[in-house]
Image (cartoon, rainbow, N blue to C red; front, side, top):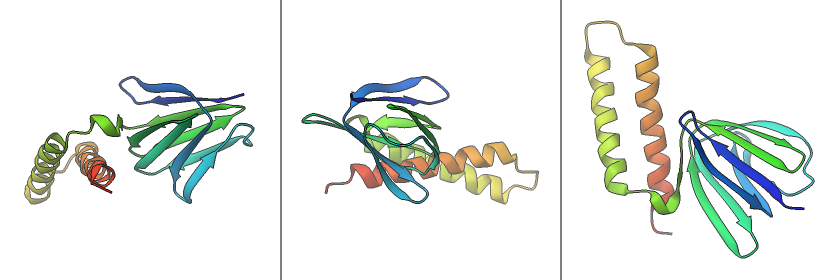
Length: 138
């Protein structure tokens, strides 16, 4: 029996598929999930999720989040996710520059820095860096 993989962001369900295996980027390193895996809840770090089903391999980039493995269902809740084929390096670099400029402005400003806004800019930079690392020629 195959696994069922669901990747959900705050905005929408990004990905759903059957799979023979899925590799997750966790705080302890990469974890390969196969059918029959023991129940598990784990923190995810920004990185690549590799979903395999027969000869087909799907590569997705995710930001930080959580994964829950229960039965043969792998549920991934993450801040952001994108298929590696859909990564536009020009758009990633533009977002990275805007976020870096906003962070510098916030750091140099005389007023209070909104912690939520600061975290959002750091998250954009983190996700952009992961996309660039994954998309670079191998």
